[in-house]
Image (cartoon, rainbow, N blue to C red; front, side, top):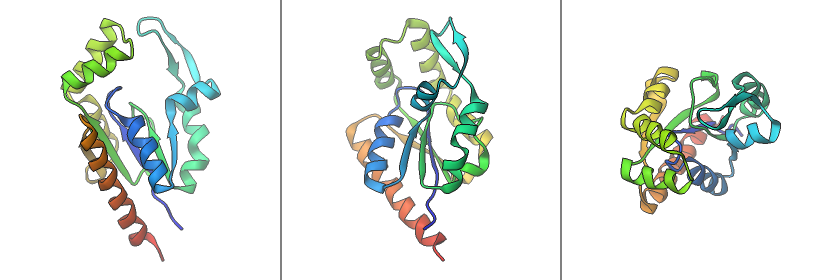
Length: 172
């Protein structure tokens, strides 16, 4: 059976991982957190002193994921999306959170002031939504609110319905 590939993207702290893991458990699709994948496989290209984090080696990440993506049935979670091949995804969801909600979530993670400020600005200017629109066909890019527990449940139900319809439309 053909299964779709889904990209969950958005500013750090908007709830991609929470949504992705829950969606995978309810849909049977495979969940891949690109940050975890990079950590486990040491898929880095140096260290960014200013942001106090490793620099992702995007080419190695793409090579690492290629086979799984071509099989289908994968949910990918990452805050960037412009380096993934367009052919990989059947739908892209950009999660968004109110600035006050996002600020609290990032503060809880211990982000330094510079990182906090830049991530909030990223959300204000919808940087990742714009990146998604520039990287994929507009009709497959969708925004989802991610502020409260009810949003999570609504988003899961909406995506599960989409998966079900996609499978119907693509079964022979």
